[in-house]
Amino acid sequence: MSTVTPVCYCRNPAKLNTAWSNDNPGRRFFGCKKFGSGFRKPCNFFTWFDQPLMPPIHEFCCWIF
Ligand SMILES: [Zn+2]
Image (cartoon, rainbow, N blue to C red; front, top):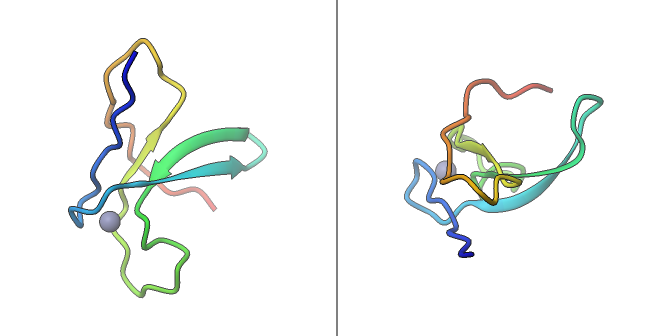
């Protein structure tokens, strides 16, 4: 089993975060490492982390905040 860190649209290794939304409490996901760091325009890269038996899926669609 190998874990590959996805690369976001900025060509940076994505950062593993933990979601605490009502729909996905504690679920991990990869997002742009610039997101939340004060960077003005992070890209909208997003993919769930808990898919061990599947290749990285582009499940980026909408940031829900
Ligand atoms: Zn990015």
